[in-house]
Image (tube, rainbow, N blue to C red; front, side):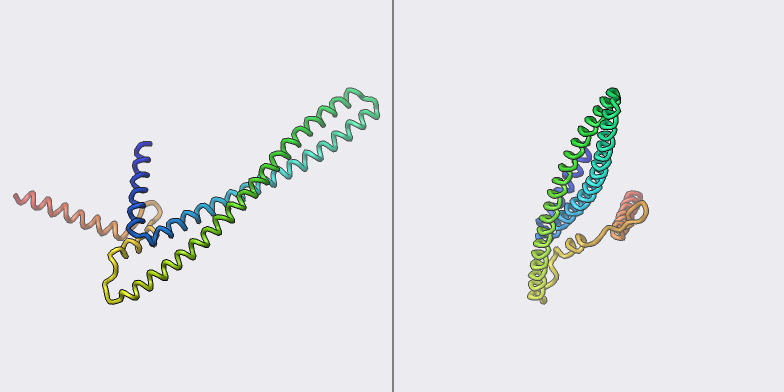
Length: 200
């Protein structure tokens, strides 16, 4: 567990450093987080609606069972079958208790659905506001770049380009041209070191 925590802490530190060096990307990082939260809320909403449907079906089925056992109880009472009437009463009472429990669960799920809808709506609104800020910040950066058209490209542009790229992957391992270039260069460096050591 310690290794995972160390790695997690290292990644968080690097991300914080990167965002401090590229403040315009902080808004994009926040927007990404909000998008993930909104997707989670939408998935949760789907799960809750499925659970609500299951509970509604169970409540309906239990109500039908209660009605059937109530009719049986009345029929047994009319036939003066006290033994059957008592058994039917007990079954009806058990079903009423079960129905009450299911009804309570269904009410709880309906409340959760409303809360999740409200949360998803608020997250969506925040994302919209953030996208507006991102567009405004991008417009300001473009205007600033246009004003500095005679000066060279800022040194941070390589970092922001990397942020917007998706990683290179194949079926089981990353295929990153930059990684391959570095590996080739590092191998050549090691060979040169070996040659120097052997030349002594």
